[in-house]
Length: 397
Image (cartoon, rainbow, N blue to C red):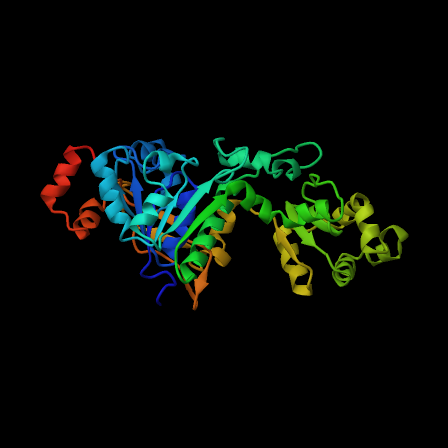
């Protein structure tokens, strides 16, 4: 299968997660992604993750998660020869992605205007916490900071636990995904050439459409509802005999099916449960009635039965449990790389969650060691081994 971005060259100047996740998507879509890293240290994510041994090797788990399929070269942007070499590389590229603070690339003499002069149809994507202008433009931004200022934390948890951080870096991930979508769209434009300004804050707010619209249009104050779905009832997380289950009886016909299945048909005659709005107002009393009927059930068994009759349900599972389940394990979400150089062991890495023409999108090579592809990339620009050695001696690469 020819991948959608075959023939596209992306220069990935990014660090940690939002930018690397953007370029992770582009690599799996077929782009050639060249990771341009700082000599001697590289992407900070090389030193991050739950395995100290890999962090010390510069192959931290956080780096391994988002960088399969990429090539790695090193360039010193503060070195005159390094900048000149990078500009030569830009002339061969279709896309540059960076997630420095706004203004950093300009101060290095490598901002959009400079790169565009060398490559007029370049797509330049700048990912930042708050965008390239505005009162917060100079603020540093990490995922948790954006989660806090975006309102995400204020609506996560319940009355007791909120505000609460989402359990994974949702702002970084959403920001990276948004940037990848914008880059892919810009590649389709004719004539090509664009400056893509991707704000993590605005990317997250854009995914909060229902919350934002309920506030702005319906005047509803956003609130933390825990495991309850505020749009319907019974819809949320319920206790069974061996664990938690999510049930979404959002339609009236699903409410009928659920109550009949649980032997609770008489509840439909209660005035407090007569309509969707009635059930929403009395959701906690309704929850108690339902959980009494669930006490003899195992969550997985109950989910299977409810789905079979048309009531959406799913047991609340752990990450290890869902990764080992056939629904995930047999669809090709993970790629296995044996004996990865620099790691010294086998690793499994998550792909993109997309199949095209029945095949999962994968990349053939594991995450690269720092500067692993320097000889190949610089050689393709016409540099000899002696040229590369001289640039190395000068601290340019």
